[in-house]
Length: 96
Image (cartoon, rainbow, N blue to C red; front, side):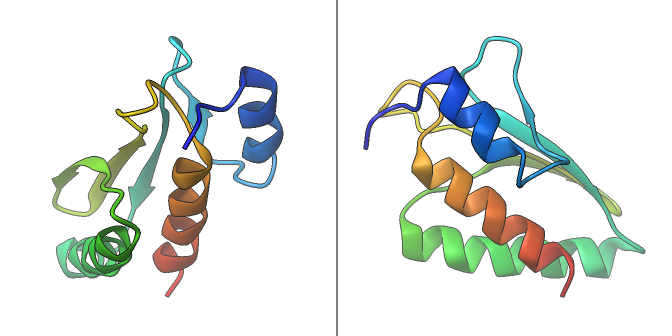
């Protein structure tokens, strides 16, 4: 999968308003806040199952009800459509 141009990433992020492109342009990220640890862990479980199916795994950090997610495609050296697709899934999973 090839790395997306900055303009393509910015266009895609218009439909993912809480996601931001990193200053170096190599990843996108978002912070999710949940009601408690159980809700945060449930979100991470849903995303983990999808990430495994996609063979595309997030970089993330969790403390209690907060999950910080960073997506990049290491093989491509930046953001690809896989990252946009997983970000879209993360947003859906966060609301269930």
